[in-house]
Length: 146
Image 1 (spheres, rainbow, N blue to C red):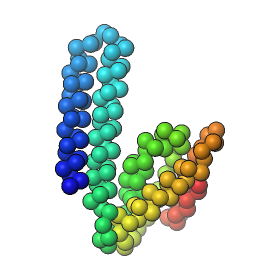
Image 2: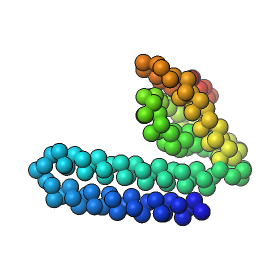
Image 3: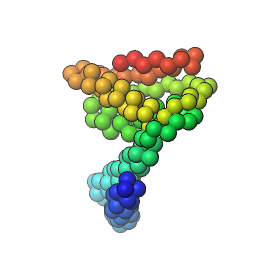
Image 4: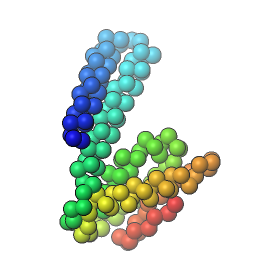
């Protein structure tokens, strides 16, 4: 079902993006209109990426166990939340250890854990002037600072 919804959403996004790109070629010289059309094109690509990330998340949200790349799970989860963090003016810095070994677990369940942690961290700074959240891994040992 998720694949069908993703297809139904991505199809009009692709049409919007195509028309915006076509129109941008016709308004060369009008910087104001060109900038608006570029913004439309960028946002349709972003929306399509969000839909695809949600589709990937729905596919992995089962309880299958196997080798899990924790760095990939963190990156994918942060990608899902990128817009929410930007809107809340929360800067996320992820410094992930390249040598982190795979773990045995459930990608979907681990992603849900990170999703909850990151969303909880985001709400910690509702009134902060410059909120910032960091996920750091030093010497391949995970540490979350919120």
